[in-house]
Image (tube, rainbow, N blue to C red; front, side, top):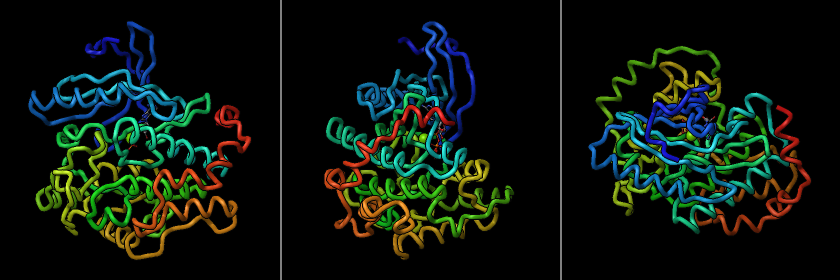
Length: 357
Ligand code: ATP
Ligand code: MG
């Protein structure tokens, strides 16, 4: 593929918008290939831009059934475009919002796919994902489940033009408190994701349950723009969501900075309101975020409704949502849980399931 020419693409549909940019369903006309094209507005010097493109080559080198494959990335000033395998059933946030709570056997398959994807990224490429959440877990009509938007390019994170780099609502307690990122933080995010999919609702919905929409948080955005410049992002973080407020950028131990913990991308907040997912309500948005962060750190971890999905699922999710990092499972340990081995062979026909919506 020679993807350098922007005019070679026909836009078919907008698939969604995130923090850093938007994702389009496109056709690469010279080859007829349908792809998902992520367009990220960046603010970087030419040398940095070249480095970003180089770093994104790692994505191209990924070869796993649990990772969305890449056709390549190129610069189209002032954007960077990343062309990926198109996953025609979309992401799991969209799926559960369309069809409701997801069958626990499918959620088991999601757990297997995420663990396998994390293992592949780490064992083969020494990459930590850093942004596990339903919108970064994709499905296609063959019933494949794959991860996207993992941390390949630190330089890209540094350059994303959106100033509102911030936090993710899937952040682990230790990340909120400023600890260095580890693969165990991804495990926490996996636990939250599994509850969200099987219950059909984000588990900390208490402070985020407003469904009304309004847009009067713009003042707050300006205020934050001048008051709270984002900290330098880490070198090795996710290229797509600069949601790593705790790193000091040198990969070493970050000093906890409570102010960092409170940053949330306003564009993401807007989008969540739009998508009727988590709603961050107008002037109460900042309070909701503080409240959520406070809950994650201070309240007991969320759980599956006990007994509803079976003891094995409960045990696995509880192991993911252990608040003490030392006690939380590593990916390797989590593979040994009964729910994982049983989910591999739970008889769920994923292709047939994916044909139901
Ligand atoms: P955030 O920016 O906070 O990480 P996000 O993951 O929703 O949020 P994007 O990564 O920009 O934002 O993705 C936007 C949407 O595009 C996703 O929710 C997903 O539904 C869709 N999408 C992304 N990649 C693909 C793909 N390869 N195939 C099909 N749909 C995709
Ligand atoms: Mg994404």
